[in-house]
Amino acid sequence: MASHREIFQKMQALLKAHQQLAVVGKRNNKWEPLFKTGEKWDFSEGSLRYKVIEAAHKEKDPIVIMDSAKDDRFVSANPEFRSALCFPVTLPGKKQVTIFVEEPEHPMAFSLAAVPAWKELAEQLEDLQPAPPPAKPTAPPPSAESSKPTPAQDNDEPAPPKEQVNWPAVVVVLLVLVGIGIYGIIAFLKARAESQLAGCTTNIASIVAASNMYARDHNGKYPKSVDELVGTYMLEAPVCPAAGSNTYGDLKYTATGVSVSCSGGHHRKLFHGSGDPEHWPSMEAAPPAPRKKRK
Image 1: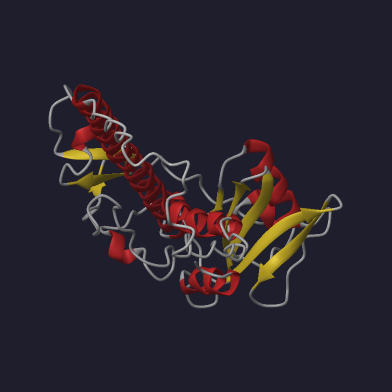
Image 2: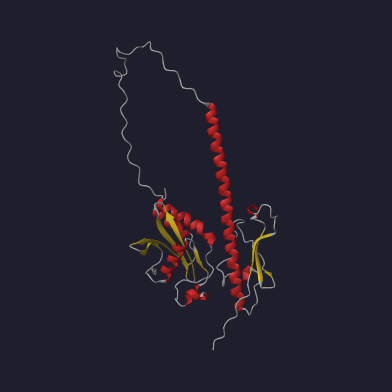
């Protein structure tokens, strides 16, 4: 079974470039890092990270900060991160920890699609079990003398009849177990498809937000493809969790701006009876607010 050190090493492997990670726990009503990379972490009451963690635990949902430099909630606080991902994890025994990952330089570095991988590793921290107790010594085999029949034993006593197996009951139990297994597989596949759809929708929202930023910086002109956003407005091109590749392609212009969609019908299993749409899901960008002229 993996040790704490091995689990933290796997978490560090998910980080990119200058990203930092902190696993935070609550002790004496204060948030303190249980594990961290880097030194500059401030979780004191009233700090920006403290407020983000409290909001995540209150809503019981992950929080993704796309770009703190262009978000009115964070600009005045002068945050040390440009984008961040924060979400709570409840371990067995109702113990709560928080995963806080931040990127100091690039916007759009995180999405909800990354949450399952972090959460799976965090939950393993409580799965570590103490070493099993030493096995009790077995009784020595009986000696040859003790195996001899005593005078009170009757050698002519017939052996007890063997118990017969109830095969109909065994078949019924096996059928029930098979049914439970099939139901579990179907439920797992549906949950995975819903998680992939949620991750894809988050990717599309990130592209729409980045496109609006691009348009605001280019006099209302939108980019022609996702590649124009990478490097400045996005850390890298997003990947559809269901397809395992970039399915968002070229951006399409609409009356209000630009339309972003996932091509290939990779999420069709969740929409029985609604046809086989060429693109699903999709989202249209609203026109960006004009920059205010400084006096």
